[in-house]
Length: 263
Ligand code: GLP
Image (cartoon, rainbow, N blue to C red):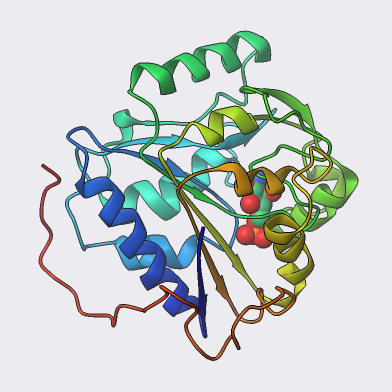
């Protein structure tokens, strides 16, 4: 596992973009795993305009049950607004679980199959829930879980209430990629920013690997890069001062090259 500690969200974005591009450039038909939440936004900002993403397939991690394209807080809307548009991805190549489905179980199976049929995810961007969730795999979640409908915990609904007018507007259920689905991605890039994530980061990376803290499964993946900013790493044991890049964590200055195609 490589841990990169950054000063700022903009440094986090640069480091994340570098990891994503290096994983995608190795692939003939690249597949990018997309995460919502605030933490990955700097990565998308750093990626925009840097490559030609029009041939890159995308899969979202999750979607709220009951929200669709006409709701600005559906992950479908967020992904189109914050990622597909700015990166110039082809909307027809980007899939999000259908939050308006009448049969969540069939939709989850369809989604799992679509990921497999695309050849799997080459690089999956991940945020971290303050309760240790990955995507919407709430504690406890089976390490062998696939895409499915889940109930959201009150703590997650409170965390995400900032995006909705009232707490009661936060959906109670979601369709999420499972932990086994996420672990099947070839490369994982986990991002966390801010001291409020420090406890979850330490437990995920250095606590016991347990289904009671879903993000701890990352310890079992062979190719994970963790990118931390703004004190998110300050509870890690033996971590370097966050004012210094951690081992292997050299940051790329913001130099931009003209867009190029993945080959
Ligand atoms: C949501 C998403 C998760 C994300 C989490 C953290 O719950 N479903 O995939 O990791 O938010 O978001 P943030 O980065 O805004 O703290």
